Image (cartoon, rainbow, N blue to C red):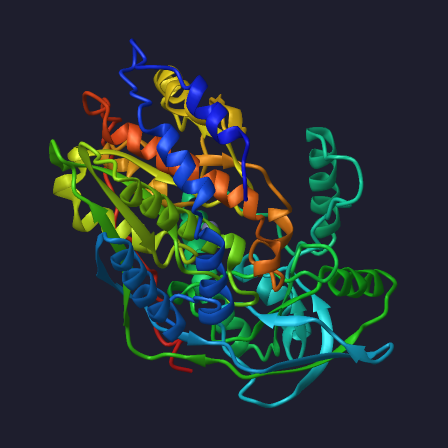
Length: 507
Ligand SMILES: [Zn+2]
């Protein structure tokens, strides 16, 4: 892509900012590298079309680690892999679901990750909407559970994607409507005492074992997206012995309407999944350019290499990973020498709860006071629009200065907001300034975790722009005169996995 803004951005770049010490020298060279010599789409295509989806614990995840390490080395960086331990692997098998009455047709369905299959057998039964939010409600619905495919929640309210944007009032009204619909199935009001809350935590772990023992065929889960788009989640830390199958929102709402009409739809389904039995080793791919003046101080640029497995994990988050790799290429091939070390980390296990980044930060806890900043890209394919300050509003001017050389590329907006759900969060408890870039959405809520998270949804111009922004801002942070003030250090509580109550898992 030729970009006439390249020269302009370099020319209008502010000189050394007096107050924050941001030195924008080098930005023009980095933008030129990222725009004129980009390899981001070629790398993205290989990762997503050839290596494919990268489920944590899968052989493809390891292939992605090996390929990215080799790629970093080919660009001239030092690169290696760092191990951490994960629960068990899970392999998605075949699936076939049909509605059998009041009419017959195939259903769009996919297993929730780390859930069991039907043992290869076809299980046919009625669909029942039941409230199993407590032991008491499970007891009330005992007879309905046996031999049924279960819906545990009222359908999600989906905003028409072709309609006007949703307002806060729309959102509140839709949630109220959903709560009212579910209230019809509530067997017992929730006890809000502390003891009851503790009991519910254990019950949440036990529930699928109890449902299985009560004779349920499986759980049906609303994909909660339009146009039969699927949704995916799950973890080795919440393995389910009972099939849990995501079905299209349109079919979930069909079942809901039929039940409201007093009719009982019948469904047949067969699933074969394989749940591993022993813990597996996973790896983060790490690469770095040593700093010339303060090599023990580090700027980290990161994204997650793992993905869900229905599509090819392109916008979540092959795009972020390949932009991080492209920023590394642009910096090293520009010939610029950062004063601090720049480290590029492609995390694994993000989708199961930021596991790879949490393991990385814990392993390097002693070095966290030397980490200048962590910059993460993980909100899809869209161009970077700017930065959310993540509770560090004192850094507003810093970020305006850091983004000044790329403001003309559309990345100049700085706002006060906290962003959740991705790997920068793993570093913040250590006092490290951690940020996740704001991006254009480009349909991310559709592709995210769905079967259409594929290469054709990646936007080349946006990813080239994002590569330039990450390279420039990361390099500027590596050259700041001093380390940024630390944030508050808060205790990191190790993950505790509640086992099922004694006797349940063995049945
Ligand atoms: Zn992600």
